[in-house]
Image (tube, rainbow, N blue to C red):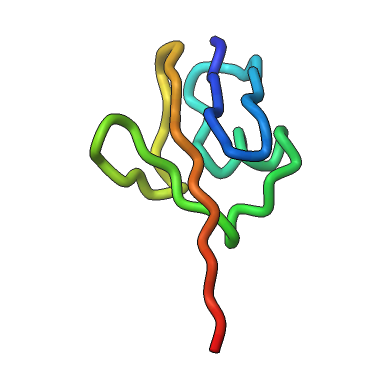
Length: 66
């Protein structure tokens, strides 16, 4: 299946097997999972979410500091 990652660093298309998790998609895209949250529509998805169809996901970088 094809997953589109819409990210400010540049959009990425990933081909991955059905049943893969968001964490696996991020790993394959070389995105450090601990630095981003992933949304579908207006819903934030846990990195453990299992994917079963082609979709576009928005990736947002988490920033923190003091």
